[in-house]
Image 1 (cartoon, rainbow, N blue to C red):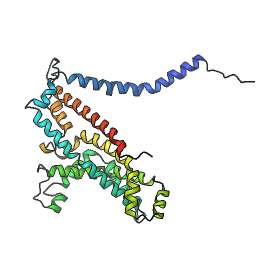
Image 2: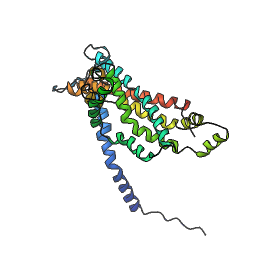
Image 3: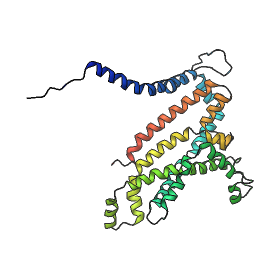
Image 4: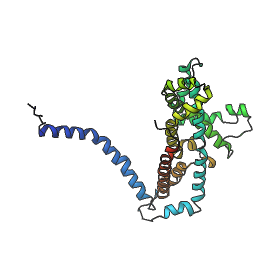
Length: 299
């Protein structure tokens, strides 16, 4: 004799439906108002001549986009900001290499006080970006900074066109080291010990185990760090504003957007540059995912 399945009353079903909708209503409204609507408004403004002082908004088509690449007022600084941003992206692989080496050392059984050093290395990850930039600006000050004592007071890090980029890469590597180290350390500790035991039986040394077992199994972590690093690097702004204080050789794309859009009130040009940056980020991210199967381990 089969037992009949009792269905919920329609009133109870409707009540559960409205309760569940109420839980997702607030974040959904927030997404529509602060994300989706902002995106559509930015795209619309990129096709207008809207400025801070304009009383009307006129549709100008693709003029703002063509001005970014052809107008003598905009394109020199726009291309300069693109070149500076790409230059600073060199710090991503440097930070990943340093992070995996530090994680390997802190994962070693020979290191004493590993917990203390792990916490110490993670401190930059919980520090404010503005505070870090201010501190590092003092460090690279040629008169009283630590860098001046080490390299000499005649090395002007904050005004030299190349050294200011090097200083930004050094600062970026240090500030991102904590999170990078932690992710690599978690990846190393998740590797099965049986793989290392099998390698020991085959006579593999520590270097061979690191390059043949550890690094290949860490490629998913490297892929994640590369994706996040490129996205954050292309959206870098605080370094240009606080650390470099608007120096021409350190102005990034987002700094250009802020300078033209908010500082100078050319919202149409600023939003056009932001749309170009968004499209570039999406294309680069898609390319990275398309090529990930060639080098990322999928266990």
